[in-house]
Length: 184
Image 1 (tube, rainbow, N blue to C red):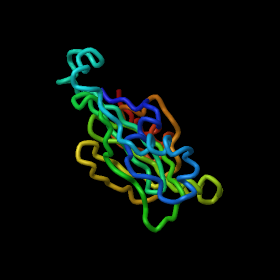
Image 2: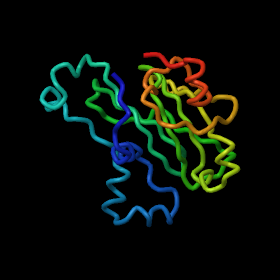
Image 3: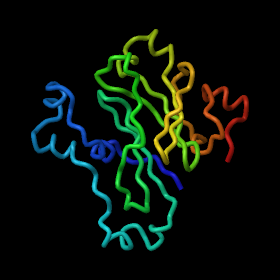
């Protein structure tokens, strides 16, 4: 089973890189909070896993998926039951030619091994022509981190309850409905 309902705070803890510039460090708050934000997320301790995760955790295919963003890009993070849900970065999505103070995006788990991701610099939301131009999109292999970029920007996706089981990554939710690309 794949889930993507974890909070960004847990995801941010898994990104162990400090803020890139002084303004970001100052925005993070006290030095103690800065240290917490850059400390990698700990897994459920091995001795507690049967109690906390249940006896089947060793063979469970359960995986949690979430995103966290910073000036380096949109981080796609995963945590597997078999590792006690220790967060790790599957991929960092960015485009070097696009300057960004931070990145934004959405992800949708397509199957047990892939996620579709729409991402862009945060500033795209402040300029109508950039927002209407769409997001960069990619398919990420959650097992090996391989990123396959889609050839052109796509309309920004909206949340849909059917997103958990797509067979393809449609160019927009409306076209997915018309083409019946979603399966259950």
